[in-house]
Image (cartoon, rainbow over all chains, first blue to last red; front, side, top):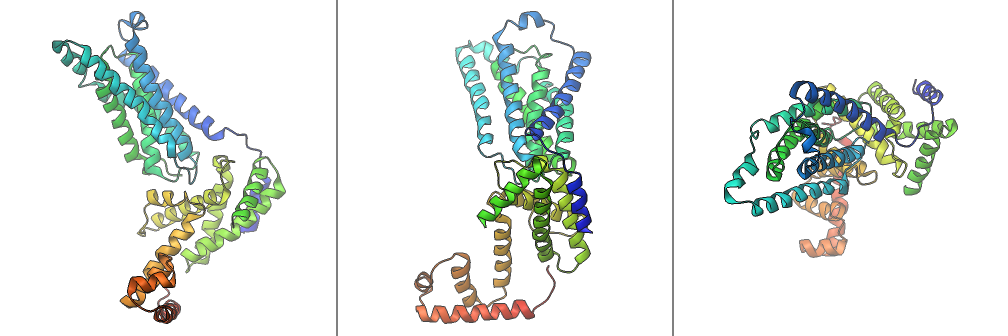
Length: 212
Length: 184
């Protein structure tokens, strides 16, 4: 019985090229991101001042922060998608964008007149921002989960959390095309909250969705 | 042991490049390891063991792209085996004491799962012994202290430590050999 199985598997052997895991994860992430992008464009719409925003530093800061979190999260998932894989030091790199965003927010708050500080933190969409980021990240998480089910994660909760973080980062980057907020403290708080909510949801769903 | 893992890793890499003979040799070797891995844990049911061995070999095959050529093969293969074992327990609706998350971290050490499990089994077995013998054996076998260190720790003479440890081991062997045959 087992002998037959081994013969069948040997007969089925095809050479494997190097970047299989990364390619599959990138495919899942890209497919999910496309769906999320379509959702933002057709349901929420681009921010009205889009052309001007392209020239503002804050637009690019938002993108850099969220894309960095998405990439680092996905980079950790690339390890966790393998049996016995651990993210190790890759996890620590997440500190870099987080710290950079905190420092930038501190500088902006310190340099602002007292009556401008509250708007920098609260903007005009603080109460909806984390929820919308969570919603936009959902298709991205679905794409990553689809990719992971074809791979072999063995620590499903941690894998789910980091896939959620990656999805949250990507979702927030896409949401930034809609969101007109320009305060660094706003991004540091409300964007991060949405991304963390995505990571927490990912951790909750991981053991059920990522099973193979 | 380490050389052995290197040889298996080389077979796997050849297999990933399409070398059927290397791959056949690898699967044959893994099969024997898996039979003993699952056999030790599911003593009662040979059919279950074979199912799990086949399941794991299938997963090794279909998910072989997740093998990182820079890593050793056995930790990877045993992580799959352990995942399949836990999945099996879950399906069977049995409770087991090591959650999946922690199971993963043990596997960072090369072939560490076997060591950890051996240690857990030893702890369980020690619990059956009288307190003094338990203390001695824990000091010698788990903490891996020398006879002299154990003597200093317990205030016994070296000779007494040796004799008592020897009796303890015999006692343990008798209890394990003649005791219950259930594994939980």
